[in-house]
Amino acid sequence: MTNKKLSLSLIVVGVVLLAAIIINITSRPQENPNKNTSESVKKVKISEAFEVFLHAPLWVAYDKGFFKEEGLDVDISIAGGDEKAWAAVVKGEADFAVGDPLFVAISGEKGQPGKVVASILNGMPFWGIAKKSTVPKIEKPADLNGYSVATLPAPSTNYALQKEMFERAGLKPNIREVAFGGLLPALYAGEVDIALEWEPNVSKATQEGYEIVYAMADYYPEFAFTGLTTVPEYIENNKDTVQKVVNALQKANTFIRENTDEAAVLMAKRFDVSNEIAKKALENFINNNMVTKDTITSQSAWDTAVKVRMNLGDLKEKAPYDQYVITDFSNQAKK
Image: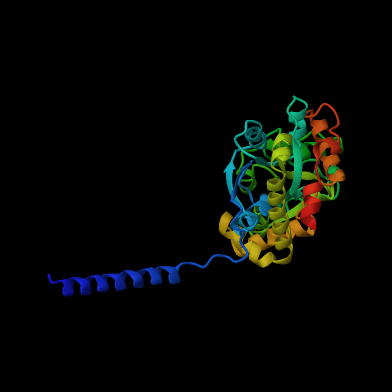
């Protein structure tokens, strides 16, 4: 090959390479101008007791991308129980737990205290469901006389509250303990008169012709049912991260309340229900003040939950609100 031809070939190759570089640069997704590239993404591990619709703020924050907006890379694992979710944090296998917040106090009596840094679900999300015309509206606990109720096995909160409702009326608890996922099947099979269910199963059942005969929220209008918890050492060493996680949950609460239709689409997809049922379930949460305007765990909600756990014998002494609940992060997120 002559020098002239070689030069021409090199020029052609150079032009092709230059064109490829230009195409690659122009087709590359543009960086977000609001992103602070000096900040590295913080990885966060959350252990969730169960993957349930009740934890709507957690999953909306995840699926809507609110955690990512806060610069977090969140990994959610399913523990298979409230006590297991908290145990994962104590062992250092997770940074946060999402489950019954009272486990930080139960654990505290054994020498390993924790802190509640945000509320996930405020209030008692259980409804008594029965077949129409077989059970009248239960206006007071004494009206349960003669009826059987399906709950999750003891020592679940589901079981504990139903037991207390019977005992409040001086009745012997007529409870059938059923494994997770078996409440509605037990009701449909006629094995019990009432199933103490939660969303979205409540909305599913009412759509199928069953009806709500009582709501636990009528007896427990404020209840620390689900919280975001962690150990004091993690808070001390990762205050900025804790704040960002709570910020994301605050965004989710606001989004659920102000954009219920869109939130319902996200929840319907994740939990394989119709948009209609998901929306109805979220509206139940909002109307009963279970998904609140902020993520603050109130003292009245905490004290009510403590009382129930003391009655069950899970707590030996009162768990002081100031000792176990931190509201600083929620107050900041609210701003």
